[in-house]
Image 1 (cartoon, rainbow, N blue to C red):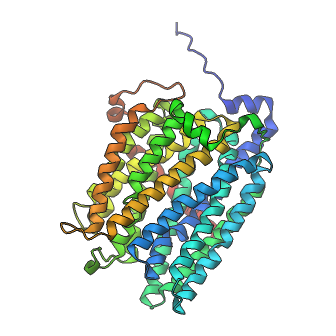
Image 2 (image 1 turned 90 degrees about the vertical axis):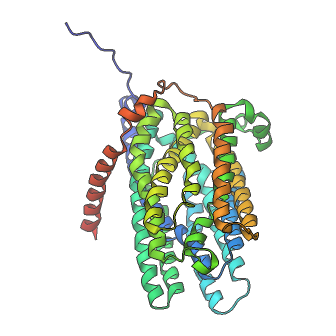
Image 3 (image 1 turned 60 degrees about the vertical axis):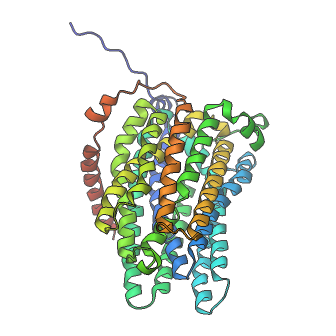
Length: 474
């Protein structure tokens, strides 16, 4: 006789479907719609955000100004979230997201106008651009706590790893496609001597994609959320009590990692695009975007394996492994200047590390913070991470402005960043604790079952299917 197997508990989604089939249908439709919205948002990033630093360099921004720009991009949205998280108490999360993202779309107008100011010889063009990009990120920051809480209400707890890995893969594909298309458009305009017009075209497309993504939010279902005064805790309370909570320790760890990573982060683009005479590689926009895209492609391939790993062994174990890979990335840039090498070796390691880090970070916040407090939790989390980005970019900007006699200043920044990342991994990773019940991790799993190649084959089939759908609609 066969032994009767243990009956599996029904999932959250199955329970909801049995009790409230209409609401379950609305949630499923919204989750599918969120992927479509994410595609347009990723396209906005591909046409727009990816080209902010190259655009600033085209307007003759210095390396220090690029560092300041990246500091602003990291800090301002985080500060905005500190106040925006309280809006959830008074207004619908849906309303907050729609208004904020629409205003964010409008910020592409002054960004495009910066090119005109540059042609007219306006002295403060770069600072006008930095201010405009700062407002762009502020409106995005206002939207994020509401969106994050909203998605937390929609995505079932027992399948977050699976859902977000799927969403990240699909939206990531659209982001990559638009980055590649943008590079080709920009390269064509550059060959005609009209590179600033090329940037204008890209930012206009980005504004259109952001507007479409905003319009799609109207179709999403918003579960009712009651936030009581007792659910509020101040930022200072969070700082004082944070060390005693898993979420607090996790936030301090990721913030320290952001400092370490952003010491080098803003300067990879500078290193690739600056002329050889100025200590850079002097790459074309096509090569530049090819290297950037390759890292994102490898991320997409690793997401399925990390999603399965996260659901089984937890997010902290994902972080412990992925952070080591992240620490090695800047050092690998010191080994060779060959574009073929740069598009493969460092980017494979980068894709492996960042795919795990992004997925684990997102899921751990959901796991460790109650739904009523997720808006506040994510705003404080992002504020400290934003301060980390600001401090890291500031350190990098100072170092790159120094006269380093024994090596290229940009490569020295990469070396410092790599060392700092290793120190953060060694000092903080052991203090982190998983907040949900997970299986015991075995190193044999990485050898026997962690198989990104299977994910790669599956993703190629999915991307071919998406490509066919896009061609059908075109």
